[in-house]
Image (cartoon, rainbow, N blue to C red):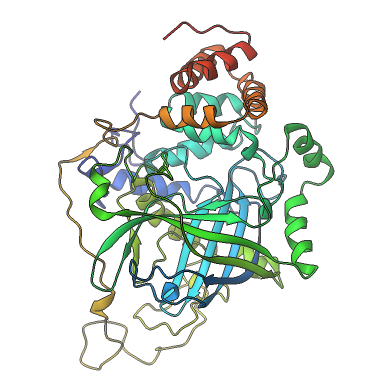
Length: 481
């Protein structure tokens, strides 16, 4: 039996997207990827396919340090400048009614209402992710959802997928560590996770990663406390954020960036566009940028938070995409999901509407409410005037090369998929290591032994002691490597 597209054509590869060279970017002609992603975001109605359970608030971002030499983005151009924001925090795999205390990554999405348009930073509470190619994303999410036959969660499928995806070892280690269950949305860090490009006014570019450091301090829940909360107060984090702000207090994060010179991307020990890897702080230290402050609850959660449509495709001049393959897949998938979930005119909803006028030739469609420019022609070029383009907003150029093929990220000369997971394990104090081993064993015990052994090989490759301890907790013995 051959895997096929929805049209019955044979699928040549279900692991890698079609890209220009090993590093990318992706090619729009990869219709199999587009079909897979487009179908994936239409699989559930009406809640979000992922990040269904969430809470949010309004506030502002304030620039505290001048980094305008690196980017022409206007909202980052002056110390003291404040930009209105809305944020949404969420769990990833559960349904809208699921518990806030489940072990799951947390979404950390920020919408900046800038003078140059809406900018969305759609990240997580982790600096890395499970996978790095968007072709694997629908399959990964399927393993977090309910089995289509039994309608039950499927731990065996979870581990089966990740045991076949060694690049996930770093993220899996984070997820089953103490950081896997934050005490609340206020008590966790946030990350842009992907690498982005900043471009300054003279066209010079650098690569950046975003870090949000909570001012409340990182606090997490142990497995027993989390299980208790899942039953006694499944909305505890939602309640905490709302009550905290309603009581006149703020939730706040210090915002930093790591900055990599453009030319160093090709020689750094880790591929800087591989979202399963971090950049070491000693190589690229955190540089302070600003402060994110949330001080206002939504008046209506559905209108203000559930209809908030975040997308990594929403950039402003001075901030651009990198060749990160997973980021490029999200650039298509997220706005496509919003068009399906909210309609073609979702950007006209109040929470999504830019804070400056919109002028273009897009017309009609379901839920069209804005009337601006309706009397003008709806095509270009024309003989009757209309909004001109702005060449200064053009994206910066960068070279691409290589054969168009479905390829993995190049590993030659780069660190492997296990090194950073091993470093993280060895950095943990002894008590954190013990909890990590216990959490992993408790969940992995629900998978078949063949899957357990394959996954244990990843932990062993990261650190021999790490693998041996998880194996012992499962009553298994691993052969020496």
